[in-house]
Length: 266
Length: 277
Image (cartoon, rainbow over all chains, first blue to last red; front, side, top):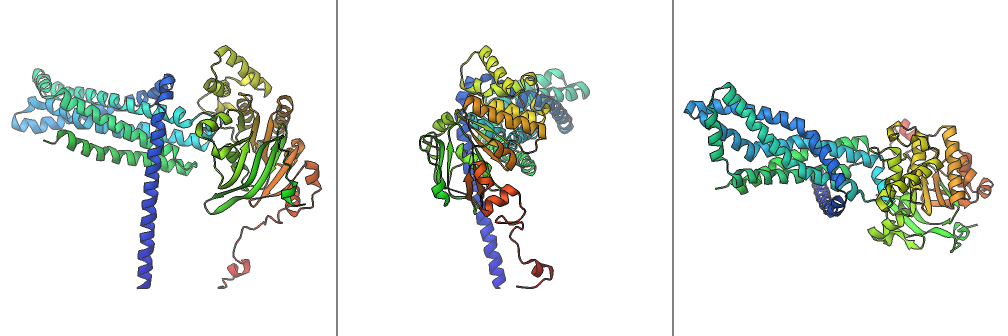
């Protein structure tokens, strides 16, 4: 009995410690973000830093986004056609493909790919800079690494994410078009005209853009914080990189539900 | 003679003053109320066994860590009380050579040395180029300006980092284990460079090292740290004839002494023969 009480006590202690660590880290992440946001002045003054990072974070993710978007659009076209044809509604394929991509799959899948491709790279790069004392060296040269290293990467991620999501949706639509119209014989005029009628600029496209901006903030924030907060060892960097991908993916899916409920709840 | 009495507080000549400074990492006490004076224009070596907190001391002086108690004053300014902006102003007058070199890996040697100049001055690029070439020439790497850090040997990386550390003509340079892992030629080059920087530019140098002979050959004054305390101090000549057991063990490289060979552990026989306490 006494042993059981001790086990309960130590279990509660562990839970309490875990809770304290979690909230302490959450607080640190918010203070970190406040400093990074203040770095906008330096980023605007040294705009070439952000251009370099947009190339590194955004342009280098372009290929994986385009290839994935094409295949997702093609699968949507195929699956959509198989379902719609049973009801004689295959001419609505364009609407199905476009709305699925613009409202959901474009922002969400591109954010998940972005977390895997760019987020992990950001964490590893910043973590390695910390492990090799490059961030300390900057501090000793009176250069604030939060403004010089982290802020350009953060803003580059936030700018790149909606552009990549838009590209994902655009090539996805063409993927659906290729399968539906090109291979399965859906009427081309119906495909485009029904899509044009059904997709609203404000409700669908604008909300999709908002989603991708929110995902961009979440994924890049997690990635740069994990890199900056990493234990500066090879194991620490490995763990931080894994945490970036897992936490970003969970954050994207969780935020997607909240945003969808707020935007499309009728 | 008690250590407290031996502290050379020549108020006008001390660039760095450490007074009653304590620092802890978790439950481990790294420094327990230590006092130190680093004199202007001199080379002061901080020596001691691995893990005694030598690098931590440099980070405390540079304001990257804050002491638990006591004070660290650099050029009349108490480091732990400075705001971020003031601290950065002070750091512009400090240089630091990291053990790993810590060169920015995405920039070549030239851009690494030019980094602080571009960040903190509005000098035209032509003048920055001249200044960087002068600094690189001082460390013998003028011809390696286009090389990336990954192409440099360990010794070259430290020389490039030294050129970067002196880019803003600092009043003080902190060297963190500059000789570790260096071949004899690179070590000789670094020793000569540190001495030359000190003599030619009058830069105050704080040299953290556990390489006894090399440090003693160029240092004007030496502090020996162990177990959170200053266990010895003096000129290299004074320390060579010191009768302190701590200093003797360190200077002579003895495996056992006040710094025990064995990390604290249960009784050896009891552990081998599984004798319950």
